[in-house]
Image (cartoon, rainbow, N blue to C red; front, top):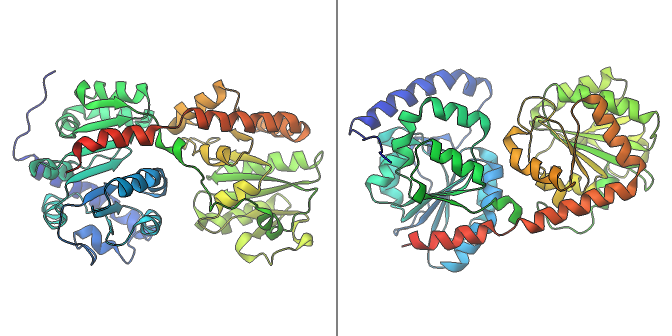
Length: 431
């Protein structure tokens, strides 16, 4: 296969493109207050603590990628105890989780903006022996600068969504030279590997190793009993909790309409809405009121207050607790799937042993959703009416709900092993 040649002027070209993108996104950053106190690290100023040497640099953009990398990071630390590690993220929440993972001597920072003069300075200062990208991120100037210094680049847990693939194909001529600077791609599925080939990646650089998210032993804080989370909501033993996680605008109205109808038959049912973005909690509270329920923010609950749950819909307005409420739930709906957001990770509630329902818009997790549906390990609801029917079915048939959850656990067990396979392939590149 022929590969497009790469003129020396390309970094300048990418600088120009990135500058245009940065200017276009500046109002969005200002409006959403994305300029956090450590944003200066994105300008190439590393935090203190980097020791001389040739560390392994792991990049994971946000929470999901950092969590997926956790087992791999632990095994790399065990296999190479003398190595220092640098972990970079883009989001502050991902950064906080990365700091909780890092050991003594490791450095956690934010990924530098993809301007050639910034990434070159950061690479010279870090002087990595290996650069690992978790999932699919393409930063042309960073990749080019690393390759120029003969630093091997490995992309793990590669997933190319339908939307991303359509966009990448339009600029294949621009991406192909960059992608072929990467030493190895470890793809989640054969479909992802096939899409890489269609983007011009050499076949000898692609291995299908599976999805590392199946290897997470637990998505929670390792508690065995989550009764205290139910008590926090004031639930008694006879009440059942439906958790709708990672919801997006347009979904809350659908869920509340379904909940209102279900309550006519299942008076013991309680609903907790967990928006994908916690800052929407107040707006969701207004929606809850319009449907005739009391809106209770979890952060304001007194705890162990049975009277609080009567006629209330709970809203999770704090970060880091969704996994715990999944464990406290009786039924889980995974959001971003009734509206065109592509869905969210169903492995988290499935690993907690809960029956899982999601909508039809799961294109960002298509392979996982198809796998669960094929194994009768989750339910899909096409619309509000189907959602009502599926939730009613699970509430009225505990044996069916338990079987669904049991098969989901089986699917997770059967698909583990990607982390170890990736580790074995990485050994070739560790200096």
